[in-house]
Image (spheres, rainbow, N blue to C red):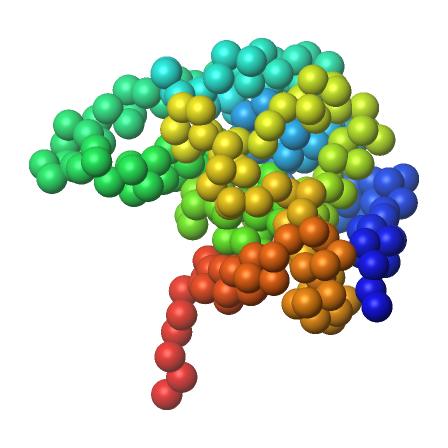
Length: 267
């Protein structure tokens, strides 16, 4: 019978080798596109910080533009400080653009804007941010680097055409627990690594509360599914009810449309 040890073994990574492969991936894509560098949103969370560290290692600080795009009343003050800390440590081009006035325009201009519909309003934030990021990419001939990891992509835990939009997603091949390991290898500040993950959709929001499970367990369920261990074995190894494994599988299937792009019929 499969054990947690088998699952843990499948999640092990060689951080030095991963760093080498991902920095080469970034360099190759920039060269192929004949781009001047990269631009990315730097929230101060571990994913965007790790992606920024990789870009700086791959290209050098001068070719990396990081944008902090906070919203008054929603963005945590510590996250702003973390973003500044990363930018200073890597000596990259860093700008702060407050998005609150832009969001306020949406509320005022859309006649039937519904504040009670929490998710549609919340998803405006990452979509506005990505619009600004792509403006700079277009303006300066850069590629957009996203911070989505494999756990988020499989769960569909991102905003379509928002934080899920990018030209490159170097962390998309790593589960969240693997990103944390890589972050420590890259010397991302420990204060960033230890912060509870949050998409920043609204004040006090956390990934765990939205997903209904910690990344630690989610990653191990995905790893068990990758190993084709079966729901019962996975549930027992990870320490969850079997219905939670079913729920994770069903969510992944339901969210696949977020990764496939525009559907075009065949004639």
